[in-house]
Length: 231
Ligand code: 4GS
Image (cartoon, rainbow, N blue to C red; front, top):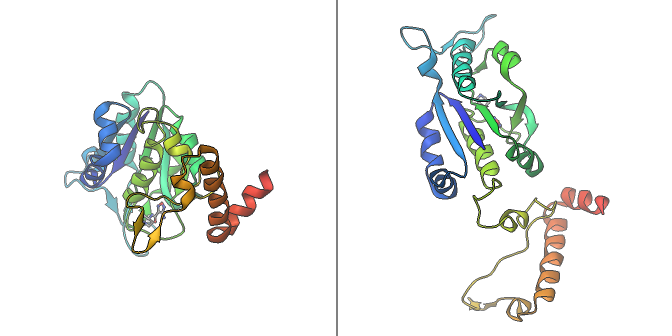
């Protein structure tokens, strides 16, 4: 899997993507992530990438051409056109299911917006789908692109030691995860649930599933209803 991120802040993206599990996965070659500075693709002698909106109004709009030239440069070195995603509050809200689908694609191109927005014509020309990370407004598309990259990366083969690592997480099954405990056995007068010390694998699995159900019912009744309806 390869992800190309087009952004005005490649250093911000690179800083996040060089750390922790994603950083290690990149070094090990389990996935490739390349950050491209849209400003490198402008033909303007002052390196401008934005301009005032036609029709008037506040703020600046990112121009289509530097983004298009960046897209062409990425496509030029790809066997097939990457699936192009624009991170935007107008998009479909990201879910675990969507992240799983995208993790199965060979190549993604993530476009990060800034300022008031992006010239609609570039979206109409290159973008396959818009994705939002939630119903709130950020200052740029970089954090959404990084969130999406992280959610995808952990499901790419080899990134986590075993696929159960992500299959048991909250949301994968449609339920929230059961609670975790580690040493010491008693901390501030609170004991670890006895079943977890029993060594009885079936009882432990049953307890965890029951916990998943009750935690989901309590914290996310919407997910719980959905889960119950499906079984
Ligand atoms: C989101 C979001 C977002 C919208 C980018 C205003 C700068 C900003 N992008 N999910 N212009 N939520 N983008 O808030 O994806």
